[in-house]
Image: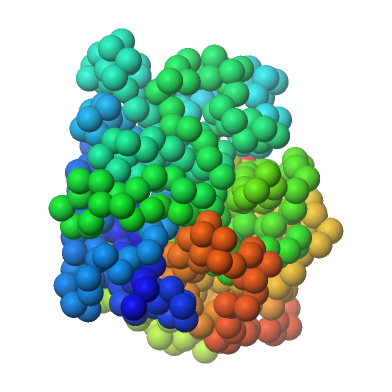
Length: 492
């Protein structure tokens, strides 16, 4: 059997999927979680060795369980948490914990440099100056970590996103590369050229020699070498940041196609084609993918907290024992009039689109004596949907063409949440049969990289599971108005 291996390196764990290269059916998958490190409030780190070991273990486990010879793997695709920033030497040894995309430690640096950045750099990157993105994290590592400083002085430093670190390790240091969907999240890549930009590098004080080469998204990035768990010579043919991989896996290849991925956070990407559109409403402009000279762009909306809000109910309030239980608990609210003033503001790590308030904190407001766990569970789901809808509202203002919303990620299996999302956003929600769309996207990307299929063939592989259509109810419009006014009152 000819196989494809998709490595999905996520925020809380690494998943490896074995996929039949001919039928594109998922044969098996294995996820290995790893620890989250919180040195200080608003600081979030990962140990790069934890990440590497989770990838190795997930691959080893799935191969062993299926009794598969790894020599049957034709190609590898990598998708990854994007802005998380890695520092390692040229032997591949980590010099510090990775600074995770959720990490807010550079907020004060951003505040100090924002006016200068906005005037010089915003148009080139499509991004606001925010701790979310990699450039500020790289600057912090160079300023505050002695081992990184020494490596920089010795020209023995690699600074990258997680995709490049995995590629470097898989190839025993032979391949140090990335591609545009990841590079565009660093604030160091010029959106027009898809190359590192000298003005941006100067602004952040980053030496270009520390950064990986930017390649097209579907190409030969290198081959495995010296891995204990994989034979030498397997090509890595596809790399995409997780949200762009989901866009591709959702077959959003036409202008106006839109997807939302519900994971730890919720991220929406809208395919805007080969012309750059600069948002007037707080959206990000980013690279979607590149292939054979074509540069495809997307507008992106970000909600930092989605599934993590449900985890908070489970772990902190202990109102549910497992995440799927939140839907049944929320369904206990039979009369929506009891919910008219209850809002769950899931801003545990700040607000993303469209407000970009790094200092925002979460809140539950509008409680009365009869509020109980059912109402809080329902408000939690509504808070996720309303956060997502803020991005949808911005899309509607910035771009005339907006198709139905294709959804994926763990929380996309929550029927109640999907219906609530349709009602708030006034769009039909389409859930595919394959919800591992990030991994599916880079797996198919391998076939594009091999030249076996074209990008236009993507639509053939997308299959509908269920659609959720708008239910007209005045409750949702009133609740959205309350949401908007509360954000203005508390956070702006």
